Image (cartoon, rainbow, N blue to C red; front, side, top):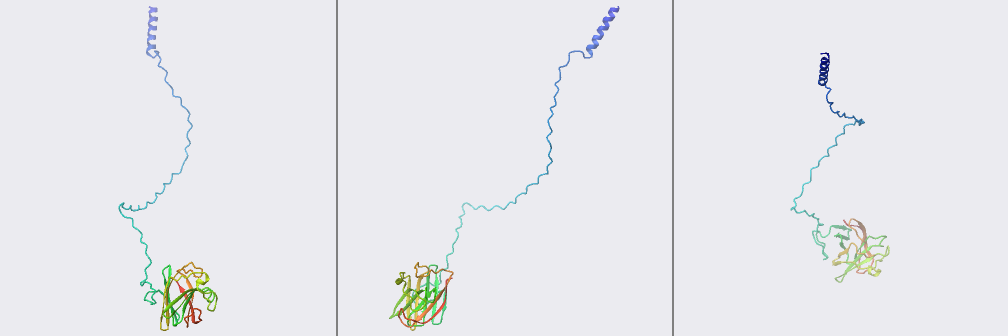
Length: 242
């Protein structure tokens, strides 16, 4: 009976062992190994200011593709009210500048290329104008003319000395005669010329005349129809080219 009791106790103990978990062990559970990652330092920053929004200009209107492109209109210089004509008559509005020296009178205008000039004197002899003299009569570009027996003569001359009848024609000095057109008339005791000359002839014995400038002048009259006759009277003034 004692042996059976021991067997029974042993059997009971074995049963209790099996019930309390001494069976097959569970497989090992994988344990995560924590890796030490250095912390990224946090840098404190000021909040960025928002960029200003650029002002938006109004878009330019897009021209219609079929609209013609306007062509700029270039204004032409106003034409003179009266065309210049070498006829010996001073027409109304034919000239836009004038000088009156008493016994000698002068009219002129230019078109940017030519000078149109009229001069008359109270004489039946010669009349003359000298443009831009340098010393007395010297250096002046002369227009010298008279009407004899109904025939007009006019010279493109140059002053070679301060005094005296020292104004030979340009052609005698090696220059050129640059009178483009002229007419001379004698009416009683008045002799009158209308003349066209270039503003810039290129001749060494002619002065280059520029619009916007003023030039001293000599005007004179003589009592004879002779090229080298002395003057009766003379005067000085200024030729302005507007």
